[in-house]
Image (tube, rainbow, N blue to C red; front, side, top):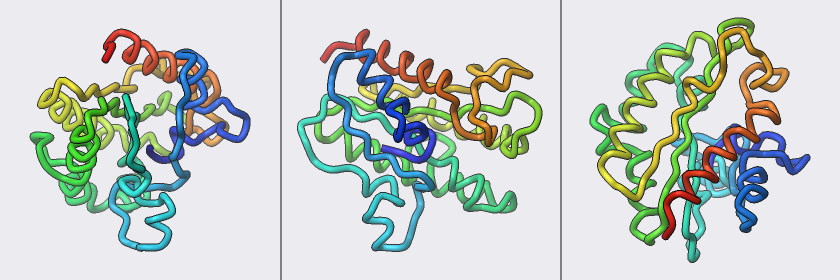
Length: 197
């Protein structure tokens, strides 16, 4: 479940979800949608997946992999009201907001949750360069959320991209390259393999 970070490369079967499926040798259902947000008010398109929480479908899931929040901050607050938007998504202590509510809903089914953070800019030529501080604060809050429940693992991607290395991003310098998708998929697969049910 999530936004374009998970959905990128799905048409070529090289998305993060595809990589996790390959690494684990287990089926993975990908419900992520390009442009999806954690806070999304329109009912019809929200039900079609633009609202990340509406992507969840009940089932006998062992693990649920989620990302989200980047579009809310990058596109949703227009670089002016990010603090308010961040607080609506997740409180400073990680206990309340749209993200913890979604994670609690999933955890109530017995599934474990992996929540993925976002790639950072390589330091040049990226439209997300100015969002670094917001990304770090979101990571801090997601870390606090995960500490509250041993069935939740937060994976920060803040240090994945070496400075000056464009190979981890697609041509738009926002989304993951196939190389990054494979690395992120391997990170998630390793978490799942190391925490048997």
